[in-house]
Length: 157
Ligand code: HEM
Image (cartoon, rainbow, N blue to C red; front, side, top):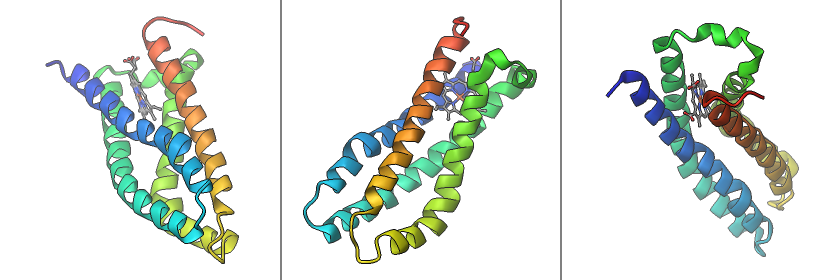
């Protein structure tokens, strides 16, 4: 198999696991947690879920970047960063940077402090904030995916 095609396959599979997981957290998990009766149960479920998904998300964001930059290197496409009609290329890197900050800095170091500050008594006040952040990230990801799939197959915006 051509190396560029291989990198594209790895890239898209990783995006499916990663952004698909984010969509599930945003549209299913957080709304369920927000509506749970017992706060302690909601936090327990959240921590169990978060621990598992963070491992998968860290692994897939890493492989997404390797395969994405790999495709650029193979196709010698670095100059496309200078072309604003390839805005979705900037979009992909921006989404990747935001998630990398979330997964490697905010989630392990800042989130525990935020939970202690916003929900010191274990109330669910943190969940609406988390939901908003996830909705914004998911919306940005979907716009970027629409842009890259349509744009790289000939649609110009
Ligand atoms: C460091 C971050 C990233 C880099 C360097 C990167 C780079 C690339 C490159 C060079 C392509 C091929 C484009 C073309 O054929 O013209 C591509 C395809 C793609 N990227 Fe990314 N990407 C990154 C992150 C992301 C993210 C975060 C998403 C999702 C939100 C994403 C979704 C996709 C999809 C769905 C395709 C396949 C398009 C298709 O073949 O139809 N990428 N990426």
